[in-house]
Length: 116
Image (tube, rainbow, N blue to C red):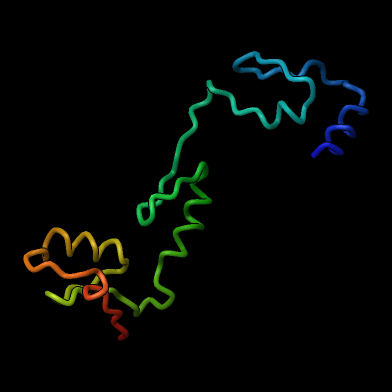
């Protein structure tokens, strides 16, 4: 925030110049250096296989993936054509497209929640 920048500007600089050690870009304060995303760093993306949402940290992806899991481990998604069970809607959709696509059905007719 602007107030944070003003407070930082009032602090005596005892650490020297605010320069990125990798790309040598100089910043006027540590606040801006801390927000710098150096292009020389390989920024890895972690993509959710269920919804394609992208995360920069594997821990955030793992936390996000919990939302895709069934609330109860007894809940499975069942194919209405062959009765195969899957633990995610995505797996059922892939199965339906590859294995049970002989007779086209809407997704809503393929998704039957099986409660054991």
